[in-house]
Image 1: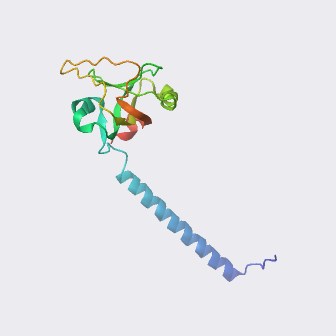
Image 2: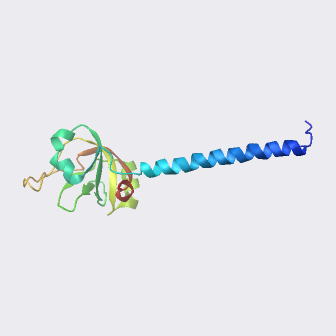
Image 3: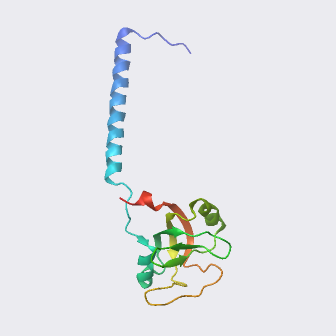
Length: 152
């Protein structure tokens, strides 16, 4: 295939096309950044603290929710999200979750899971549930990230 050399007129036209493309892409980039700022991560409608989940457990049972809490050291028989006020929720067994959880141990995270309502302790009501072998209070868990990324 042979290409013909560009004339000065063609070059001006090509530069104009490129200039318009750069301007258009720049405007799209700025608009995207502005929009991202307007919808920065915040607490989504279905995001709750550990304490809120315990307080509203009957209403949330069976729902897929996001839960904010401090991740414990996950082991074969024990893994939970904890709150500073003594509340905690057991996280169901998942090798994939446990592998991901290693790097978030002791940090405040957001976990997406199905709330089953099983084995929920309520320190205010002095109800302490005795659970064994990682009851699935939070089933099918996935770590979404550090909680600081989900706050305004």
